[in-house]
Length: 111
Image (tube, rainbow, N blue to C red):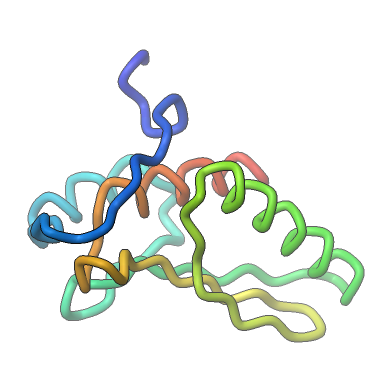
């Protein structure tokens, strides 16, 4: 599909636009892996991964960093020995934008 999230590029966001509505977020959520969740207020997109050991966790985190830097859109991360919790939110609009879903879709390709 030529309009898929993984084929899009994040656009700069300096604010001045409203965040996506919860309905729009739920629609875009349907294009992601089922492990992604919206926060109750619809302002954050969250997912958690589990790994066998620290090395695999950090390898994943480094891949996340590469995607985030390529898109110039950066998640909040919580990392431990065998887990990574990731949260997207576009701080400039205090909510979610399409950029958050684009990055989430690209992270889905990491496995």
